[in-house]
Length: 121
Image 1 (spheres, rainbow, N blue to C red):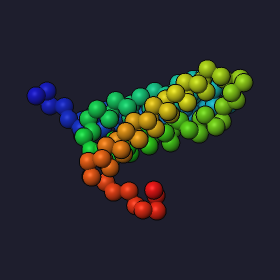
Image 2: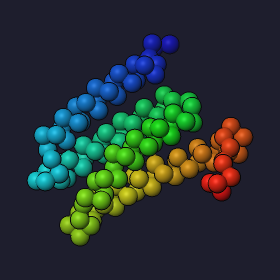
Image 3: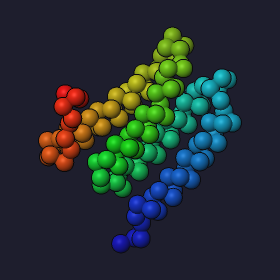
């Protein structure tokens, strides 16, 4: 046992996310688009790394949702003609997060841990 656990991982993640938020504040999309997007992608990867410490499907979905909420606005702001490669990277990462979330939700329904309301079918 090296003494590391979820609370220590959260503390490190919080520090990293705070630093990346400062980078995004100092390097706004206007004028620093590539760098700003890289900081968003780095923050998304912090959440992805934190997911390895989480065991609950609901908590994993919350981390995935944070990644999605971080990246989706950037895709909507970017011009695909000017930033084609960045749009593709962000859409790939979003697709990855949505797929992971779907797999968790399907596993929860299949295991009867969650019920799907009739109005959602």
